[in-house]
Image (tube, rainbow, N blue to C red; front, side, top):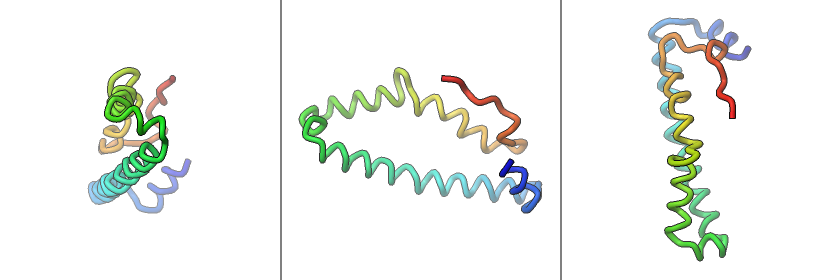
Length: 96
């Protein structure tokens, strides 16, 4: 598994945990603004979505954070990355 190669190369310990946790925070901070900018651009370009206005955005928020809550259900998986004992092979993948 790639994570095993990463650990073998970088080692384990508090410094390594701090490094991979920091990189995850930076990656998340870079990723989500790009996703939101792309979403906003696509919603402005689509006449149907533009016509729905704020109601369409509320439906999208509900879809992601309410029911069924796809993004909301990902939060525990994201947080598990910050456990000191994290290893991707040690957790069970959620089923749809």
